[in-house]
Image 1: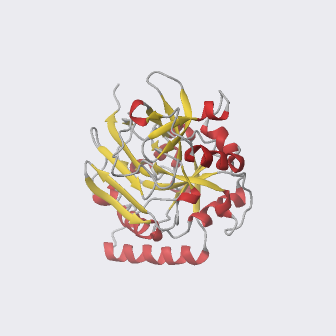
Image 2: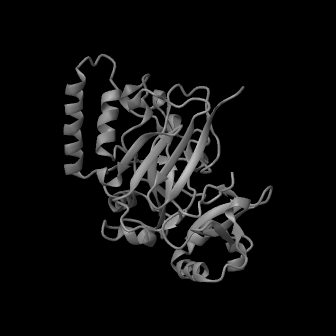
Image 3: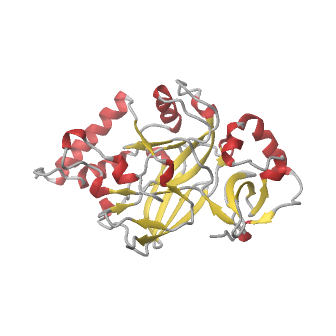
Length: 332
């Protein structure tokens, strides 16, 4: 799908963003995109025919001033986005996903996921969830797990709902994109390791989140979150210095035009910097890696309305643009 920008509304915050684009039937290429909907092929600009967005992020500290200069330069050699296809902005080496990071969302899920035999009234189970949130915040232990890069798809691509997915759901999220190798960094240091931000929709099959056959092992994120195309990503990576405060952005998802999620990242239990720092205490974060920061309240499980064939999801985060994806049921 090509992009036709609204001349009255910039595509994103700041002077430029990174994207992965292609001409019709052409190869993908890394691009510098301007808010007015123009794209510059970075292969030519950097004199590297093999350049990708990932290779740009691999040398982010050196590339950033070059990108600023290119964005401020003349418009020669730029192509309208309307003539190009937009893909997921980066192919990461690693994907880190966060669960239970929005207070209201976690409480809603706790109430919706009634365990077999739990006949307590909703008010009692909601009060229990609130106590759990208070304890988690006090102990300062984020919940991070691993996703698969193969689940990523473009911001305007169709999403295939697998035949086995009985309860497919949406989860729009702010995603941090790593710009420097990070291992055991402090919370104060963490922002310096973030190259930028993008939008991710972390689709989840609620029916397979928990292993009912082996409840003692808990959740099954492989099965529930990692089908091909279950992570629409992008459209852009907006540099971190163009986002004033990642902990104060509006995350909004509309389903067929109706608002389902609409929450500020202020509702996050753990800040973006806290999440990056926490993940880095165990893993070595690499340039281009994604850290999804969790999803706010308003998912389909809570609303009693899960995804089905023909649904169109529109996700936006302040300053990061808009992604639009259509759901199609799997055919034999």
